Length: 165
Image (cartoon, helix red, strand yellow):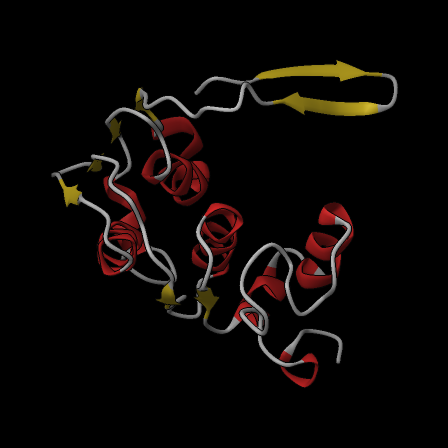
């Protein structure tokens, strides 16, 4: 999608090119990555087609329908297919991004919020399922205040609503 990854003795380093490019990819063997990749694809400079993930309709929520609804709710152009998504990037605007109590939806919203001011992640606490301190780790990664975390102030809820509070 326009970046490079390097595994060194210090860990994994990702370097972006300043642009995100669309992709056509079968995610059948890595379906759990679909929400994050869909979020990036919504921010890309060209369309993306994600296939092989019809099984995502059977997770915490129907992830294909949820991603379509939420990205389109921010002004996106996402269409469901029989086994995936077609994402045609458009300028996005802030607004609520519902998670449907699905941790992967929350992290996808946070990714979009890095580039789109005003994205409000509903129920970020659902990330505790796989990453108990997601808000704190995200904040630390970005070197920002916990109430901004790369998105609009309060988008990750009040401190009392965050996991571990």
